[in-house]
Length: 215
Image (cartoon, rainbow, N blue to C red; front, side, top):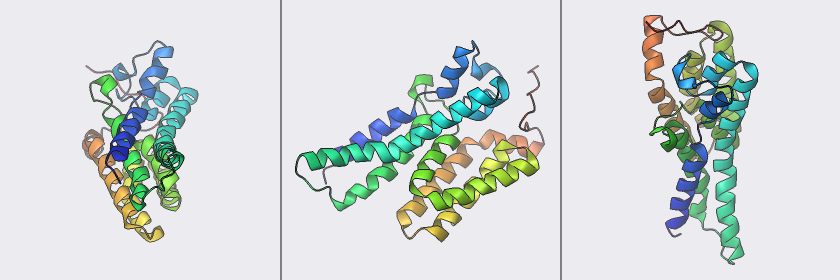
């Protein structure tokens, strides 16, 4: 298989993941989401600052980025091959995985904000729900249980990321998908470095708790 379908898939998926949904939605309310709450552009901070409606909308759109990158972009590539009378080669199975990773990277390092973006949890959820539904279900239950008991979104996200590769290994026969789960989990931990520090210091905000103003 030529290399250009991989390059095109990576670029389209990265661009699809890059729109800063939280920032754009907050601007409709004349709020710079980067200057309030935790300063993050993700759904959690939008939920904290603007309420359930905007927060759920951002969550859904950011998750949809991952779904489009996994199910949309590779299908378009396959249709192009079929239209030319060419059967997509076996290596085509890598395209959804590549698209999913690049969509999360596009969200985390969006060029629209000088390559500073969100933490990729919602976009990763869209990718995982599309490619590893059973493992995603296990991680989602883990997230909801930890959130209910602790009210820490960051801790619940980290716990879900930690269990994700194991859940993928238990529910998947394809090692490529297990590695995908491991990569997305590693990205989640990397983007939550500051949250981990605040959790260890006892300074992390709980859901529903407003962040105290900076001195």
